[in-house]
Image (cartoon, rainbow, N blue to C red; front, side, top):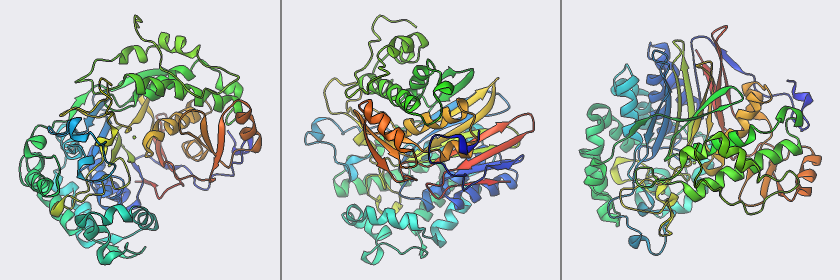
Amino acid sequence: MSATAFPVRFPAPPRGVVMSTRGLVVCAHPLAAQAGLAVLRAGGNAFDAALATASTLNVVEPNMSHLAGDAFILAYPAKTGEVIAINASGAAPKSATPEAYHDGIPERGIRAGTVPGIFDGWSTLNERLGTWELERLFESAIEFAENGFPLTYRLHAKIVESQADLARFPSSAAVFLAGGTPPRPGSIFRQPNLGRTLRTLAKGGREAYYQGEIAEAVARFSREVGGHFTVEDFASHRSEVIAPVQTNYRGFTVYEQPPVSQGFVLLEALNLLEGFDLQSSGLGTVETLHRQIECYKLAYADRLAFAGDPSRVKWPLRVLLDKEYASRRRREFDPSRASADTGPGDPQGFEGDTTYFTVADRDGNVVSFIQSLFASFGSAVVLGETGMVLNNRLTGFNLKEGHPNCLEPGKRPIHTLNSYLVLRDGRPYLVSGTRGGHLQIQLNLQSISNVLDFALTPQEAIEAPRWSGYGGADVRLEERFVPEVFDGLRALGHQVSSLPAWSDNGTLSMIQFDHESGTLMGAADPRGEGVATPW
């Protein structure tokens, strides 16, 4: 479809689709993409390349993900043709009771964090599907941590944005505000403590992190600064290897991260959206946007009402993903009016949120990988001499007694982190994801619809103007939409405001597969620093 046919201000794409037949890495930072590509070139598979990319991202993009964060992974090993999910999210410390947080959960500080799950997720992927040892896979990350890399304008801006929070904690200020000010763009940024930790983990593996030297260092630091973490909290952590959740959308099988990820919301929204003929209403029109926005709101309302850690809470996930439930829920859609207060559905008696990257290799292996600290720099706490930045994922809990996502010791919060993998006739067709917190589902919904409903190329699908919902009737549109779209949505009751033409609310990475030719087609979001790097 030609960009000139869109009813939006959408100039010819500034980037082209990147193609390869041997391998492709698409991620948010070029140095991390090069790290993954080097592994592919040297004979590693997509899963090896993913771990080289993931570890390097922790170093060069420390505001987005780090060694004390979490991860969710979808893996498609071509040998089996079975999609597996790895849930590498951590739980609340054993002493993190609601009573301990009677004054609320702080946004920053060590008490805002959960047990980090990311390294156990890396180890699990490596053990199950990798072919290289961690020492070899961490070479780029260690090089950039110890010897440094040129600080980007984007990372400089993120340090400036979080400067006040980072300055509160001496261990954090020592890393990110050495000399009292943020490092300038282009300066060589080094993290020697992080480099030492990476070397320790490359040799000692999971045991060093969760039972040995690293766990002991974090527990010791936690005691010193009033945190809840103990060695026992770390020792009890285990990643889950489980089946992903899935649905069928217009003949395509769409896989998502299972709970505790909120990935099911995307699938429920797709089930709702499937009842509408979007091709007839057209790309970027008032009618199509209204349908997408309202379907997302209906699905997200169910997330808020029902979702919790499935190991602790029983909730109707199967029903929420049922096509008949979607048909019934769709009746609540009003084509003439925006909903200001969307309530959940009624499943009773019915049967039936970061950095993202993706890697594909020439053997057909595919990885959809998302890892995060939650907020930028997470808790804003560097865990002492480990050099690791702690997440602030505990803020994802609810403190309302009886709520399915209520804080409990040893319980995992519902995560914004999610990514998707689409199969057609049992083979990978599309893989994508984005950073963006609670906006991730919305951006993934639009990108998948852009490809499956409107046959856009991966780059067009990413660059197309997008909407973002912020609760109730609050909707924000990139200003590249034509004025008639703003006016039309307002007439339906949406409270519409504008975003910059290329907003910074998410950066998608995407690969599409052409099995007839064996071509991999990659695209990265111009809203960030990401690249699609071919072999």
